[in-house]
Image 1: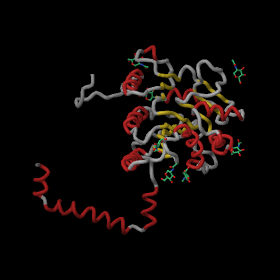
Image 2: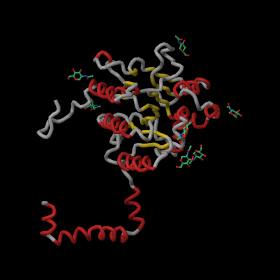
Image 3: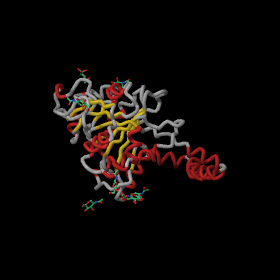
Image 4: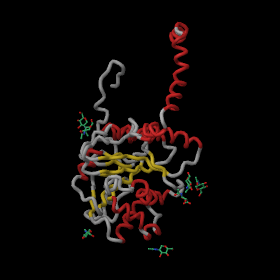
Amino acid sequence: MKIASTFKASPFATSLLLLLPLALLALIYLIPNHIYYSLTSCRPSPANSLDNRAVAKPEFRLLVGIMTLPDKYERRHLMRYAYSLQRNITTAQIDIRFVFCNLTTEEQRLYVSLEIMHHDDIIILNCTENLSDGKSYVFYSSLPTMFGGGDRGGYPLYDYVMKSDDDTYFRLDALVEALKGKPKKDMYFGCGVETQNRTHPPFMLGMGYIISWDLVEWIAKSEYVRNHSTGVEDIITGMWLNTENRGKNRYNNYPLMYNYRGRNPEDFEPGTIAVHLLKELERWTRTLNHFNVTKGLKPSKLYHIP
Ligand SMILES: *[C@@H]1O[C@H](CO)[C@@H](O)[C@H](O)[C@H]1NC(C)=O
Ligand SMILES: *[C@@H]1O[C@H](CO)[C@@H](O)[C@H](O)[C@H]1NC(C)=O
Ligand SMILES: *[C@@H]1O[C@H](CO)[C@@H](O)[C@H](O)[C@H]1NC(C)=O
Ligand SMILES: *[C@@H]1O[C@H](CO)[C@@H](O)[C@H](O)[C@H]1NC(C)=O
Ligand SMILES: *[C@@H]1O[C@H](CO)[C@@H](O)[C@H](O)[C@H]1NC(C)=O
Ligand SMILES: *[C@@H]1O[C@H](CO)[C@@H](O)[C@H](O)[C@H]1NC(C)=O
Ligand SMILES: *[C@@H]1O[C@H](CO)[C@@H](O)[C@H](O)[C@H]1NC(C)=O
């Protein structure tokens, strides 16, 4: 009601409103092309991005690829919240990306485009989701083309790349601490199977493992790896590295990366790096509550959350 009467009272405002878009259009048209392009091509990360790019001199740069499916909008929404509360990492650059194969529906093309415009944190690989057992190969082997090119004066854009899943929650503080001072070459980091060789696990579990960029490049080039690109994703990644005696700098974070065990305080390890098998919302709730992630909520007259 109020809005309508305001408009009635001011015909000048109404005509201004109508003229404004026209004026803007004229302005864009009048600006010489090269200036207009330089205004639009400088594309900063959206305010809603998870990137902690304010880090001045990172000790390392890590790309985290979370394997998921296009339709899992709600899970991405939840994980963005979980990680946006951890953007205050000051010693490392951590870029978190959701990774999936080709979109297949009109709905996905619209909603995923909107997500990208809003968050810019999605990587779409050239594959079909059916090929799920070869997806981590496609991921690693696509990265040199996506991020290569030596934008950092010949250095690769990332020192490390993690492959993770949409049912794993990482505590980035603890992860950064565990990665501190580790070699940036020939490095394989994660959590081995409890019953296997603890100092040199044959492979790191799929909940989340990191390899250094030199190994990413090797995977992308190796004919052997291309010939053996399918299988149980975490086991074959270990197998690729083992056949050429690579990943010699191996770091097993057992028992700080583990499968969800329950809701009680003793079900979580002090110094936890990652909790896995967070399939249901209930498990996410229990886990995020255990780690007090909403402790920073400011009191207000506008809401009451007991
Ligand atoms: C980042 O924020 C979280 C939650 O507020 C806090 O627990 C943590 O200590 C902070 N980390 C750093 C490196 O400041
Ligand atoms: C995508 O993959 C298909 C089938 O594997 C291949 O034919 C095509 O050339 C690839 N396209 C790009 C852009 O890499
Ligand atoms: C994925 O989509 C692109 C075009 O968007 C197409 O060129 C490519 O062949 C598709 N790849 C597969 C494996 O279907
Ligand atoms: C996935 O595979 C199944 C059977 O192998 C097939 O029916 C289905 O169309 C495939 N889906 C896609 C998106 O390729
Ligand atoms: C674990 O693997 C390393 C390297 O292959 C080997 O030297 C060591 O003996 C193994 N330890 C056990 C307990 O098998
Ligand atoms: C990969 O497979 C091709 C075709 O089967 C074969 O000719 C080649 O020798 C294999 N290369 C390696 C390194 O296994
Ligand atoms: C969460 O907060 C409670 C109450 O302040 C505290 O006792 C507990 O140790 C905290 N949990 C963790 C994992 O930091």
